[in-house]
Amino acid sequence: MKRLFLIAASLLLLSNSAPRPVADWVATVTATPEGGYRQGNPDAPVKLIEYGSRTCPTCGRFAAEGMAELRSQYVATGKVSYEYRDFLIHGAPDFALALLNQCVPTPRFFSVLDAIYANQPAFAEKLEQLMKTRSSEVTAWQKLPPPQMATRFAEALGFVDFMKAHGVTEARARQCLSDPALIKRVAQTNADAVNQQDIDGTPTFIVNGRKMRASDWLHLQPELWAAGA
Image (tube, rainbow, N blue to C red; front, top):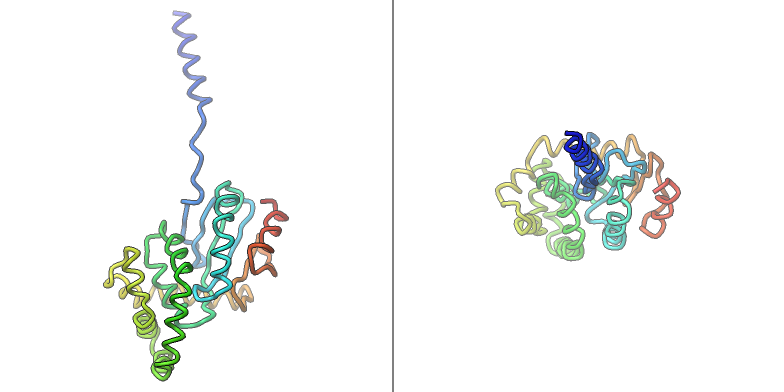
């Protein structure tokens, strides 16, 4: 009986000492009350917020040059959480893309955001061509109510077809472009950026509540180190 007890105790110790699964922080994505999307440990000691625009070339450059290292070296460790919030610096095109990006299931938000930034040059080329050939129509679209305005730009710039290639049906995309709750959410995030955070450009990075001067990965990374990442 004593020997059986010792075996049982040994098994119990082994089970208690077994390594616990490590959280996949890169795959942990949540919508925030402020209207953003956060990737990573919600209790991370270093909280990074980016106010970004999907048509902003500098934001696109950050996505290309910094995101892989930010995720693999900082978010994955649980030390840094990364939140993306919309700042519609280029108006209607940003507005349409924000609505469509938030149309996908929350866990897929960042993969679609990455795809949008990767396709940014093609979108920019279409916008330039649109301004050259249909400028009077573009001016008229900007005076339409938000659902119609977003839909016109999404159609003309190929956003709807782009989202179809990323798993969003045309019907669903059009529904999101006209969704009153989603429109209100995006507009409120943009308004709060101006009124509460004094945001006036993109990308703007905030680390643990402090607005950074950095606008690229080269200068942002030392700020994460300084904050304890």
